[in-house]
Length: 124
Image (spheres, helix red, strand yellow):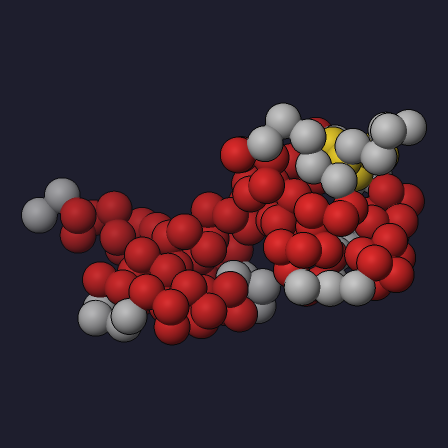
């Protein structure tokens, strides 16, 4: 199952929330993203069906290995791209918003090239 941008956003959000809390529920995801309960429920169902997410009986959300790998990849892209944009002089708010949009459409090949470029130039 290929993830669409919205599914990617949910995975990244769950990953981010799990960094600061041991327990994340659908309501936490909805509040963080500003989405309605039915929208969150539908999206989480799709992620669960796709093997990205486990939902415990108490409502706790846990990323599967597949979900964690995808979320970490997205979070890394977001972090690298927002950092790059800020290093170019873009304000943090704009850089973060733009990185969020770019991270979903940028190919692995282009992202790898950006990372290689940054790695080479950070050593100088």
